[in-house]
Length: 203
Length: 169
Image 1 (cartoon, each protein chain N blue to C red):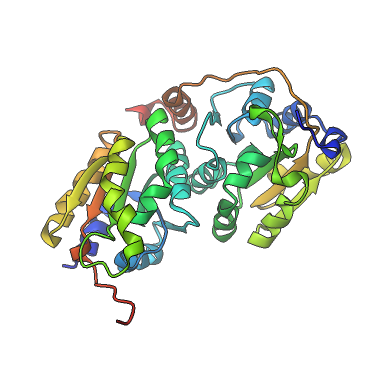
Image 2 (cartoon, rainbow over the protein chains, first blue to last red):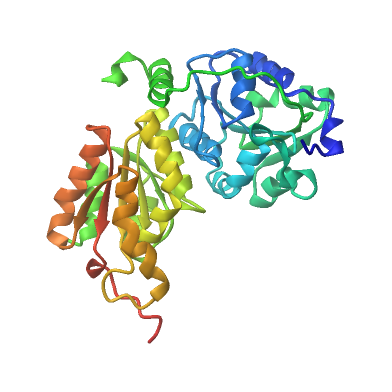
């Protein structure tokens, strides 16, 4: 394990952050989680039909959230993903900025490491600043969150302020137990559509 | 009728609401028509794989979408096609071919020549239109295959349908 020293000192713990976001977001929040740890974080906070956990398709979490947000303008959509997954799809931040979906919030749990593959450091450990990249792309509100106070300040914005917004939450680099959601993709898609659109749309 | 108008008519008939694209000269008029259509959300992508994922999200939210790209873009999509297959998302894509017919640019050849096999390798059904009069019915078939048959289906639009690009030579 090659943990950078900085990421071990971050005070925010990813499971607690996911739990807090889930509490504030409530049961109607439409959630897309990126492959790897954010799947486990939000499953630990409470699996439900309106969470679409992605077990693959790295780099695809933000564009899936974008298509969903544009199709469902009256519902808030949250994409939660990690720094590695976000780095693979940085271009999608430019695409989101152009579309300006007011109902989309993107949360990046940035532990500066690739957690699923042996905690190798990512580009955010030394150089890349995802919030700055988001700002550079033209995302309306892109911020880095470092502590509880900043998190609590941001949370009401989940529903109150127009998106798109990007929260890069610096979380402690730690290896945690797996808490797995269902993994059959067709099931995950169908349960989401049934919960959102109703039984009739399953035909 | 121009062949692109038949694709546009098919998209409208199929109630497609999100059209995602990386710009291509062969799709230029169709893209413009979609941008001007208030019932269609037109999304310019930074890479085609993004578009595949956007269409998955659109379907989760109850909307139909279609991906417009050129053959080079198919190579960019390969892993994201896996998302569609695993989750059984429908996919309708319209691909303008390069590297196939009087191509000026050798750099377009490899992906153009590999497009059909790359799609097939990822279990995307492939239809080809090399005659303008076939484009309408084949577009309808592709959209039906996607949204009624729950398949991934591509329509390859032969390069002979496109204006020839000669880079001023």
